[in-house]
Length: 246
Image (cartoon, rainbow, N blue to C red; front, top):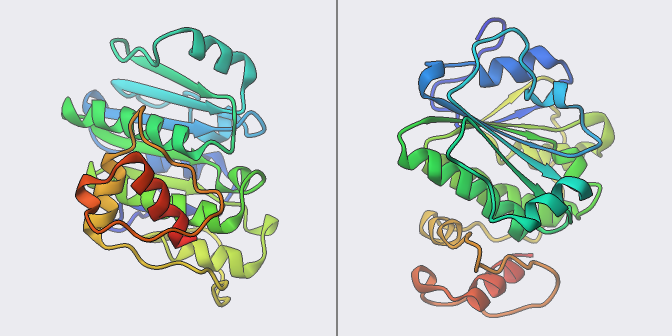
């Protein structure tokens, strides 16, 4: 990746620059015939920025787009049976930008489908700053933590955009702590005081596996006891587990 160095073993990268070249370089790696790219984007974000454009490079064998807050595409998606994974391009749309269960489910499905077929998976999440316009930093932090572990479980290489000028230094520093590497501006500020209990690898794996159409990912309010048997968690258990950590 010319001009951009991603450390060996860095599955999840935080990108704090706003140039298209950085985004493209994070995606453009490996054999295009075995590469599958997923872009998660918001209508307010540019498709050119997100890496869904061509940029004169070799295109991957599989391409996916999840559009969040796009009412027109969401209505079309709701009338069908979900993304069509049979072609080279698959698309999904989520009307409610606060519905993290739906978003986690969709990302997980794309990755699982492609992982089952042996593709090298690359993900662009554009952007955490957009998500933070709709949801609190604590909730987005929890969601990002689980999501990065899910992506790592399928050996995906993912990068997440964040505009450091749009957030307090403490918020930026807190999100930096989730990622294997930061490309661009990096803050040395202390992390914000997040009431968050670090999940074990088994907890994260079990929770990510339950991101399905029937899973509950409601993380709004409430305090519940953590279930003892995470590997056999019910939908209510998953909701309680997440609520406890916030």
